[in-house]
Amino acid sequence: MKILRILLVCMFLCAGASNGYAQENKIQLRWASAEDAVMYELEVATVPVLKDRKAPQDKIAYQTTAIYTPGVELDSTLVSDKKLYYRIRPLDLDKKAVGRFSVPVPLDHGIVNPQYPAVTTYGKKKVLTPLYPVYAWIPVLHATRYEVEVTNRLPENPHGTMSSSYRIRNYSVESGFDYYDTEAYRVDGTYYWRVIAFDGEGEAIGGYSDAVPFQVKTGIHKWAVFGDSITHGGGAVSNPPSDERFDYSSYLPFPVKNLGKSGDTAWALAERFERDVLPFQPQYLFILGGSNSIRGGTTAGEVIESLDLIKQKCQDNGITPIFLTLPPVNPERIERVFNQPTADNWQTELQQVNAYVKRQPYYVDIYAGLADERGLLPVRYAQDGLHPDISGKKVMARAVQSFVKKYKFK
Image 1: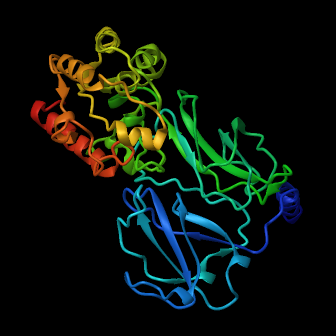
Image 2: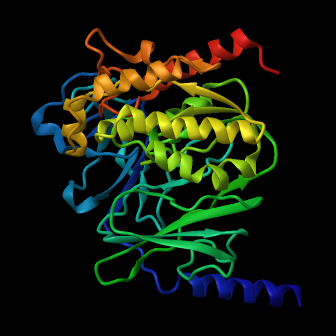
Image 3: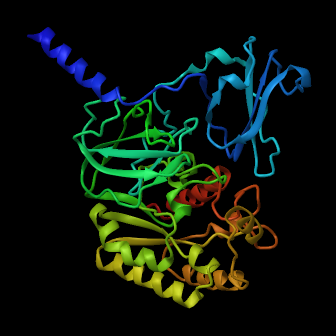
């Protein structure tokens, strides 16, 4: 009977993968995500080129700089059948190198004809799951659509193509390499997410990716951060909040619940306070909000009104509000990356908001550490002009740590 049960399980799992097909003539390469890299240069050559030496042009089989994830899938027919080696180096928004070339690796060390997508979730494992998770993966060659599935138990059909019976959410994603969940997780439990790719005909390319677990725990949290995308995470243009290095709270020496949500205005923060903050009962709440409002033309008075409302809600619920000053922005970079204008009077309005913040009983000044002599956010801290990169997030974290040390909160 035991053998029969094993056979039945195997038949079920195999059936789950039978509708998908494994692409031929492709290879998947992966590498460690470089700090503050916007994109990567990939070079495939017939000889191993060491250090930053330039490869002879006649030895280069393939080269590209259009890779925005720490990995890629290549059509193996684009390169010759000779012994090949690949190396990568990180680039900034201007495609200038921000690191050295990696050590050459034989191309055949990559994954040939992968059976499912590779996820790119990075974490220190000590950081609490954000209220609004972000799911990310390496783009699948020739995929035109993806489906992200979230379950409340480990899926019973790993790497299959059928949806799990434990599915609680699913999202269709047109191309790209990540998805920002717009639904918060406020119910305790262990959850799993995975992604599957589809071609232009609607057929599954292989099966679902590995299922990535994450835990949600409500109840009392001593520390929490509340804000927009600057709090939520992400940076260096192409790095989503699933990379914890872009979450300033990940550099704090104590567990912090991230209640940030990308795209929020100051009013949106005040509006979602009850449903997104109160389930976690934070004792201390770091609040950073208003950047999207100010750059969009909202007056300082309106932003202050929203922040004051958040302050009152904190006090009504026994939460100590700790405001962060708004960081500067860089309109030229924002226009270039997001194709969005910034209000002409943003600096005047921002300074009024920061003056309000500095009148509060508890505040952290991050503006001073991030602004250049013109009052702009320098490229070395934020390549997109809005979201501090890893270097900028560390500046924010140091300011918060100094504040906590000064007041000796228990």
